[in-house]
Length: 230
Image 1 (cartoon, one colour):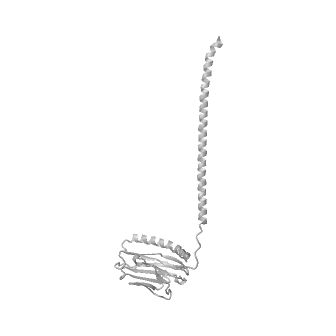
Image 2 (spheres, rainbow, N blue to C red):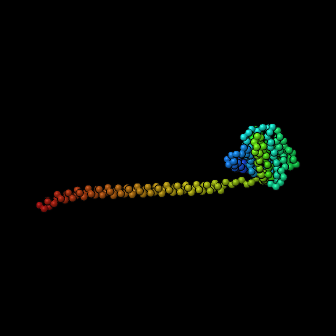
Image 3 (spheres, one colour):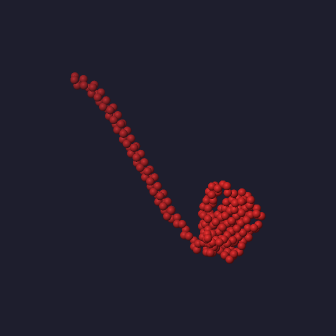
């Protein structure tokens, strides 16, 4: 059961995050709205497991249980009629239907503006559109969230990270080789430069030595000439 719950969370959590981001953008673009409903536009559930369908809202006013109103409805598709299966009139009232029976329970918290539901023993026939209607007076705006439930008969194949790891390793190896090559080339150039400087210094030193030796010999010859004449 824990594995199934974890799998379910993996399936619908990314959609929830994207929906929340979209709703935040919408809220920023519509500052005059006093209520916004936060839902996941699509949720995937595995046949035979349980799934939580989240629905929460923002409001300028605290929930007054005597005035608050909520309805959950189901549609097989956009053109189908609404079938109400849960409502709130001073208290949560699950409506037993031929479709859901008692498989749907309230999983939210009104103090936290959360009106989520949980469906147990998900069936293939549960696939469809779920509508979350909210009215929180004195807000004049009524909230409406739409969630599409997709029922899977088997888990999707896990994402294989082997290719990504291989590509990363290849890229890392190539970068290492490039860096190593640059270091080697730099070292070779530095050595050649040092050898060239050393050779020039040697030539310069030898030139100085030869110059000094030539001067001494020349001096000796100048003083020896008169002796040869005598």
